[in-house]
Amino acid sequence: MLEKKLGQEIISFAYPYGDFNQRVVRAVKKSGYRTARSCRGGSWQDLEYPYALKTTQVLNGLSQFEKLFPPK
Image 1 (tube, rainbow, N blue to C red):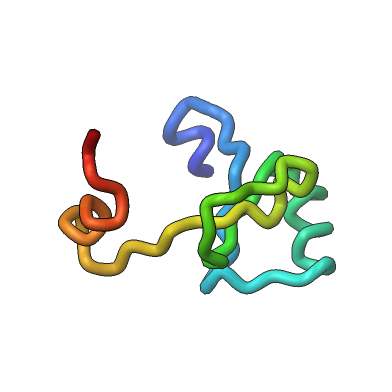
Image 2: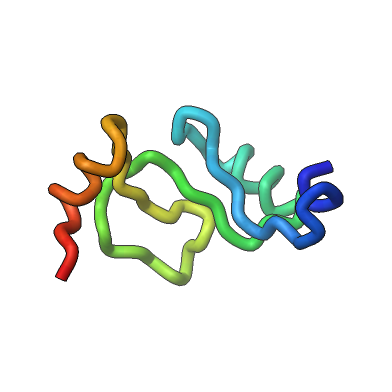
């Protein structure tokens, strides 16, 4: 439904609450997603395993994000 409304393919999935296991990963792959992200923090990504991409969780808006990643 989202793809139809947006007019483009959605290739990435976000695990609800960042929680996943191998069963969930298999379902995400079977659904056609090419990547998925969790709430596991960190900046290093294992590109050999695109179904456990890490992220930086920002809860308090753009000001918190700018503190974590100041503009250059």
